[in-house]
Image (tube, rainbow, N blue to C red; front, side):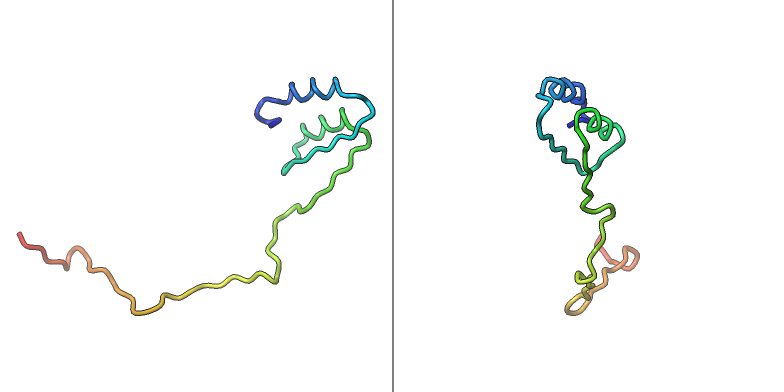
Length: 84
């Protein structure tokens, strides 16, 4: 929302909010300019990072599958015969 041009509107709303309040900011990413907005409008902000790098847990394995049944090859254009 902020990166879509709403940052000035959000800033205006936050300036009108009471000084004593609880403000929560949720974001999948936190660029520096969003951190600056948070720093201006929040008292002692705390950042909680759920994961900084997505990883696949060891319990989740990957598997490959082989085709079931006979495999067919498609004839090449050079070897196909067509009536003229």
